[in-house]
Image (cartoon, rainbow, N blue to C red; front, side):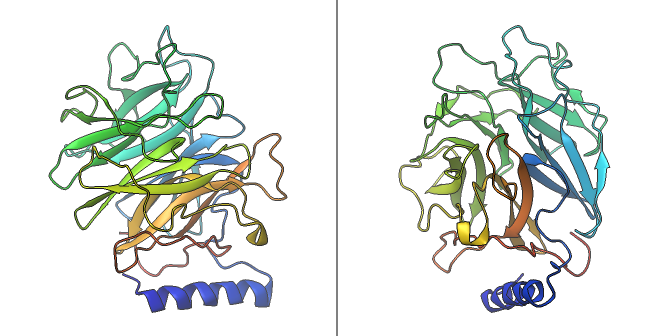
Length: 329
């Protein structure tokens, strides 16, 4: 794991390389060519898999890439989800958005995704599939509800150290702050164990993501408009996966617009680890900044905690997190 001094030296060296040569280090941000948002990262058998929303405003399927060295990337086409393969009378015209993928206790992989403003769950034996809907009727595991204050998108799974599984989701309507819902899942990874609970933390809009460290639960999320510079990453801390999350953590927001670094509207992130070091994957707006139409880029950077257990502010970099020596897990 990187120490604080080693991390600082790495960031300074990478930044010096960019300034001295004009050529970003290998693994530079953005990590892949093209315009994508809402990244999820999974590392399996030495390969990092990246899935994301296609810009602008989603596509008929997801973007998917893989790498074994954080330098060379392969593009993949997933068989599922597609907009047409997700069957529901209550879905709207919103496309395929905001994937999150996780390996379940049974060794299989589970993909949670928003289609038509409803949440679907797929299962596969491998991150590249073939994927199939966990429901035989090809429907969602969370339907949208007309008139509800909860926009049913941005599902994020979390497996606790005791093996219990939780699902978080929720956004707002009309760019007003939203509500975060949470529920414990049965071992099948999609059936609710009890009723969903409203655990909305302060300044929440969307994009929940749970991290556990030293017995504390860090509910991370985004606030602001994904279409402009107000988008940012915040967090709150609780003593259980279902909260309460009534106060924000120190340094929140930990990632926000930095015009000096030409980083606009960073958010909708996930956290992953390599060799014990935490990293954050997030999207930012394209350069030069132009919110119309929305075009986002995927970036990786270091994520660190201070000695008191608070998440430190993330420094957006051009060099990203690579090159890292050795295998990815």
